[in-house]
Length: 250
Image (cartoon, rainbow, N blue to C red; front, top):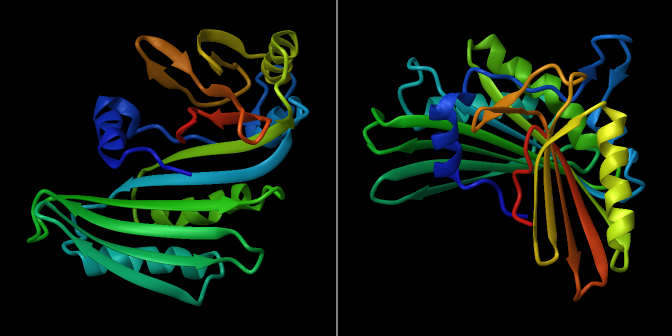
């Protein structure tokens, strides 16, 4: 599964996302009922096959080099119980990075990348990304608090995206797809902001008063996204439900 293009994330952050934190757990302002992205996804009736948490951090100025940033990544791994992991390094004309790969005892695959962009001497822009991917059990989503608390302890703001991928057998008819979208939106009392359809791909963005934080896109508040695509080769209909946005290619 491809992740957000690194440069695109940086551009989005410059546009104003960097100060916003997103939560898996959401709360109804009226009833006080806790709602999770899992609850919202389950309203679709799809079979969960992947759950993913993505963390993006701008490293603080006191992190002068790649080794210190990589050390912070290792702290994250130790915090979530990963003690055996591999390390890789890479370099281009305007980028140096170190990657750490491992898995939790529950089988959640985690990758951490520390990068310096624009200047190999260490004075370039510094970023840390953490990606946790689980299967049908939803365990990757449970790592959020532990990962986020590591960065908060070091005074860093974290941008977080959560996404669940599911499937239906066969090519789901349009009338049923409409019902699926309505069920997802109704679960969190969300209102559609925008929707598009291109060939066999449907995309919906929405805003829910039950989700605490929001993302501003073209002047509209968005905190829930849905994407649906039929895969003819597999004869399956894929569904992505994310907060605040779907950050995978579909």
